[in-house]
Length: 253
Image (cartoon, rainbow, N blue to C red; front, side, top):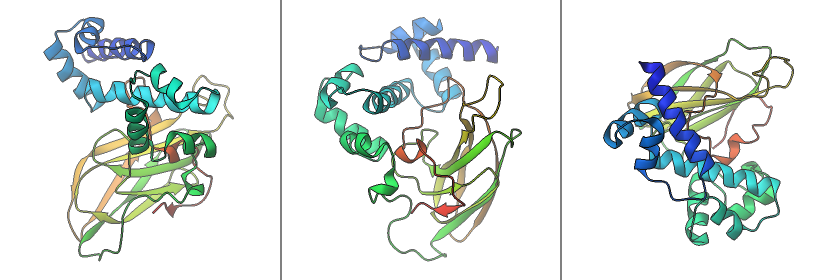
């Protein structure tokens, strides 16, 4: 039964990918999945962690990022190709989710470290007011996994500014300090080195843990198991995830 549900959700996502420039209704998505609209929305959130509308918006912005880097299309042309009637709305949404305006993303190739962009905590905070989240990123493919990003977000969609994040040279131990108290998802993403002849070479590996709640002054220990990204995994919109530098762990804030 679970496999049938996932297959239905995958059909709906394929429809979204094929019609990014068009208006798509919940009814269209539900028809592709072969569910009623109510049942589809519930099952979609259960499988992906977010609503169909947010997933579609993320797919559109993900494609916009690709067009910015691979074509000479103007921002207005790209906004229309990904379903936005207003270039202003597109620009605001892109900046909010990706962390950079479209023009800056194109200029720097998604490298926020060159733009002065900051992540995570803002301003000083005492250890009594914040928490520590630490643990390990675990992968069965240690010979083909490269640099890794780990960050805390309010839901399974990696967009906007994380509550805390770190960059690792490879899967292994991580520590996030001065994490605001609250409920979070820990999301990890690893670049896969092109050193394997198998079909998974080049496919990003991801890990998700949550939701979990952290309290002021606490230490939360979490192990995250990495796996290849699947079609139902929400797109990674945050600019820093596009090019994770191969360095030892550092706080991106």
